[in-house]
Image (tube, rainbow, N blue to C red; front, side, top):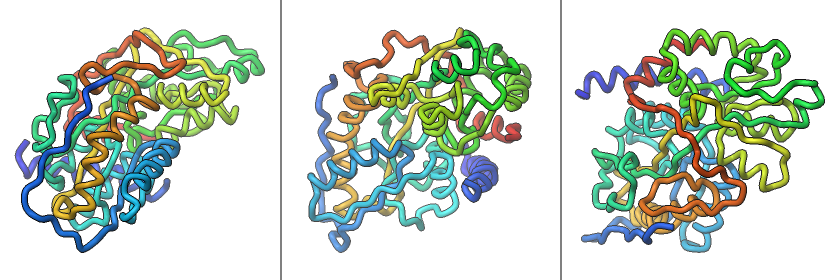
Length: 341
């Protein structure tokens, strides 16, 4: 896409995102060798992450163990708001690294990102390779229909077996979904149904579903949190987060409807200019060589790396993935312009 057209898409997305922000087993990779001397004037590294709190806490623990001499912080920010921040600030940002940004958002802000082509991408499965090498893959985030059986039983409601079931009046205020304007998780459900049914039918469906939605959450974590608290009976949420909740003792169940599991790919990157600081490069290298792999082993096992295996208890196997073709930056901007909630 030419720079002028890309800028137009960035500005269009910013307008939508900033309104939300105001309201709300693989081979061990090796970091590329460095030449020259990096600026060591600052040991502070600021990371903005769209990952859940438990993942960010794990990253902080490991980073403190690895780099006790560095002053590292991880600030949580929903993925859409993170994209809006970088689009608004460009290279004049306090952000040294971002983690867990949806590919379609990352494509909008790639002009502000440092070249990471020195990192070997042959370790990734094909759809996780980034052609322009301004960011690297780290997560495949699959979605599911997640239910709280106890809430359904208390309300006398049968377990849903299709998206159509969620439109029944008995589900009024018992469904939670992330907002597609601030959450990549929310958007992937929209894109999946647009691909499965066509745009008009999909948007008509979400107009009807909105009548039963208790809250469009700003974060993809919101639906599972609401399910765990017993605030809703059904959540359109992340498979991995549901599994984590189940393994922590929550009574939840994961369902896949006929349209399959929607999914998004997420990446991490360095804003242009920040790669010249040694502390930033050291931390980014540690994500590449170690933390991304550990993230797959402990939290998000859906395939990113060649030869990657899923060993997480209670994680679904043989997941029926939905059609996510055409999930481009331009398509996301266009569809979000029609989202009213």
